[in-house]
Length: 305
Ligand SMILES: Cc1cc2nc3c(=O)[nH]c(=O)nc-3n(C[C@H](O)[C@H](O)[C@H](O)COP(=O)(O)OP(=O)(O)OC[C@H]3O[C@@H](n4cnc5c(N)ncnc54)[C@H](O)[C@@H]3O)c2cc1C
Image 1: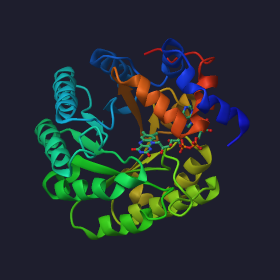
Image 2 (image 1 turned 45 degrees about the vertical axis):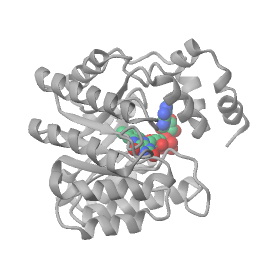
Image 3 (image 1 turned 90 degrees about the horizontal axis):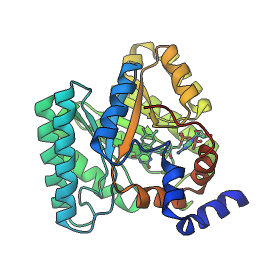
Image 4 (image 1 turned 90 degrees about the vertical axis):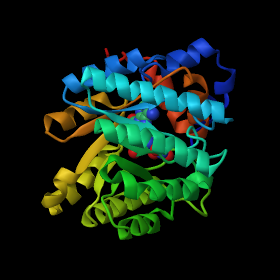
C-alpha cells in the first residue's frame, strides 16, 4: 500500500459528507429505486446484463432486516413491471447474518421465493472472513430448494476457497458462483497477499468451477485476469456459455465496452440506496487502494445514466 493510499484512506472519516458523496457518485446509481431502474434500463439498452444491490450491511436488529427485505421486494416488483432483467445481490449481514443465522435464512428465503416466482436470480454475496462459514451454511441450506435461481460468491484471496469450491461442487444440483478477488483486508495466515497469488488462485478456481459444470460470473476489472479467463475459455470452448464477466457501475467503462464489442457477456452491478455513506467509507477504509481510484474518479466524467 503506498503512502497516498494510506493517507487517502485514513482521512476519509474526516471528509465532509458532500465530498464523500461526490467521491462515490460514479459508483452508486442514486438514493432511490427509480435511480437504479433508470441505470438498469440504460445499461440493458446498451447490451449489458445487470444486478441490483440495495446498499446496507451489518444491520443491528430485525427491524432493519425487514426494511431491507421490503425494499428488495418492492424492487423485484418494479423490475418485473418494467420488464427488465430480474437479478438482485444480497449482503449476508444485511439479511441479519450477524444477528442470528435463522433470521438470515428466513430473510433470504422470503426473497428467493418471490424471486423464483418472477423467474429472477438472487446472488447471496460474501463478506469478510469471519462470516464465510455461516454464509456458506445459509447458501447450502437454501440451495436445494432454489437451484438455478440462487447463487453464491467465492473470494480467490482466501486460501480456503479452493476447498470450499470442491465441497460446493460435490453437492448435487446446479451451481452458480460469482468469483471475485475479495474486497476485505485479510491476514496472511488465511489470505494470499500478493496480487500474483490472488490472480493465480482466481484462475485455478475459475477452471475448477467450469470443469465441474458450474456457471461462473467472473467479477473483475483486471485486464490481466480477463486475459487469463479468455485463455482458459479457449481451452474449454464448450464451457463458454457458462461464463460472464461482472463489473461494478462506474468502473473501467472502456474495458467493459470493449468486452461487449467482442460479444463477451457482461453484467453490471448497480448499487443504490440511502446507506451510501457508511458503505463508501467502510469500503474505502477496508481497501485503501479504492480510495485512490475514487479520488481520481472524481475528475472523470460520470457515465450518463
Ligand atoms: C460485480 C462485482 C461484485 C462483487 N461482489 C463482491 C462480493 O460479494 N464480495 C467481495 O469480497 N468482493 C466483491 N467484489 C469486489 C472484488 O472482490 C474486488 O475487490 C474488486 O472487483 C476489485 O478487484 P479487481 O478484480 O477488479 O482487480 P483490481 O486489481 O483491484 O482492479 C483492476 C483495475 O480495475 C480498477 N478498479 C477496480 N476496482 C475499482 C473501483 N472500485 N473503482 C475504480 N476503479 C476500480 C482499477 O483501475 C484497477 O487497476 C465484487 C466485484 C464486482 C465487480
